[in-house]
Image (cartoon, rainbow, N blue to C red; front, side):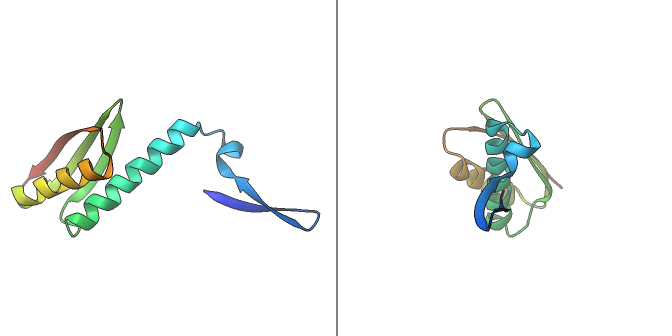
Amino acid sequence: MVGFEFSVGILEPLDCRRQSGVDESQFDLERLAAKIEQTVWHATAAGVKSLRVELRESEIILSGRCRTYYTKQIAQHAAMEAATGWNVVNRIQVT
């Protein structure tokens, strides 16, 4: 997240990652997980309840609940498209 900092009347970008001590790669992974979550949410029309996206090494782990196997499949394909090159482990339960 980028904020702004005033210094002698000059507006300068402020990188929140520097201040919070968050590692650059960790920040990128969090952004990727958020992107995947949003993509899955839109692709399934919010059909996956309690959606959770975890990133481990080169794996995306999806979990949550949905009503149909079709929704589960759509969620998996949306995650694959959002993060090309990652393996998707789909642990979404159909209830």
